Length: 571
Image (tube, rainbow, N blue to C red; front, side, top):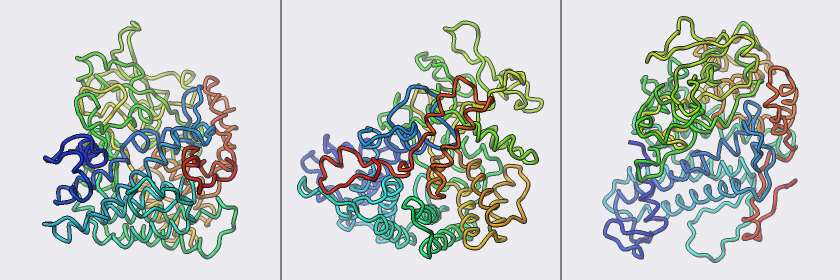
């Protein structure tokens, strides 16, 4: 069962108080009356996790409207929206406001739990400490996202009890970093190990360590956002990132799945590290389809950042209960990969053509339909030239596989794959909502973070090579050796692009490397290339970022209700 299946029930009573629950009347559901049993505390903790899977966060907007604005993809529509993905955001954009609010909602829920956890009786101190440790981690994770987006943000460590006195000034981000980092580090020992958690939908010790490495690496690059030179603090950030990534590495708990696609097949088919290798360290739970469940815990990743049929048959009751190629699920095909990413996989290094990840992350085929425009039945797969697997004339379930000609495959700007709806097992399949979990942290990311920190602290070490080459070996690429620091850094940055594409990390990587503006503006050359089809050349506008886009605008709503709040420069 997905970890957040009870979220809707919890929200409706604990945080809204709109219905009866556990024989308590709505006006009796206060923190003083609710926090009585271990089960109450468990449900409250689910409520702290809940904002992560909602549509303003990983359920849709995080990658679609915010972090999706990078050099590896573009929004496959010429109709623009006021989001960062289009380089057109402004302080009145509703998606920016809802992300601000969902983060502070999660923080307030964590604060409420932390203030009341000690009220619960008949619970072991070990269990209480675990619940509190998870709440501390989640509160810190919400704050890290706020800092990534906005920099200085109000640091609120108490639950809201009154409508009075809610105006809070922005706290220096370095103080926010100090607090969120210490809250995670001080409570790691109380978290379960990755071998003890029920699923990677719940945070573990090593997952928390991996997120700490990510936080320290982003903090190391903050001087770029603020136009300051690197200093000893920068080096200390890299040392801390190395320490926490190495803490994960030396446990020996985690490993890479033998095949790259299997990680994402598991995410789509409600499985967890099915090969027995714990590569997925933390993933956000999505469940159901919003058709035959009441939890409303499904997201839209499969239909926005993922791949499926461009034709909708969800209204056909008989068809919608099918799975696999018989019903590959509808996809809006919102995002296409960029020519830059295509060339990273297939052309930039002829001795290291990356079919393992390229053929999965960029859809290597499209679906074939009949001549009747009213019949959306999938008849087979049509591969791009050179990408049909050798000998694969039929899929495993009997659908014919054909191939375009080289001329027909001249356009190298193609739909994102990554999250394939073919592998969903929940039926009937909804048009938009999918049970595909979102991967927040994978072991391959930890390996690459460790390799990066090692390199930044004095050049590529044996450990740095071991880590990056482990990721490359899984992809079928030759190992690296004999590089200087700058060359290793570039290889590492490319490796992160190819391994972690479309997982909501690339934009932040570019920002912390200090290359966001130049990298995005340089995309014009790719758009102008003949291999970027004319029909998609409108995307050039989406790369015209401004230098101040490394920070998001404070929402107008927050500025209007909080007179102590100041806007970010440029906005």
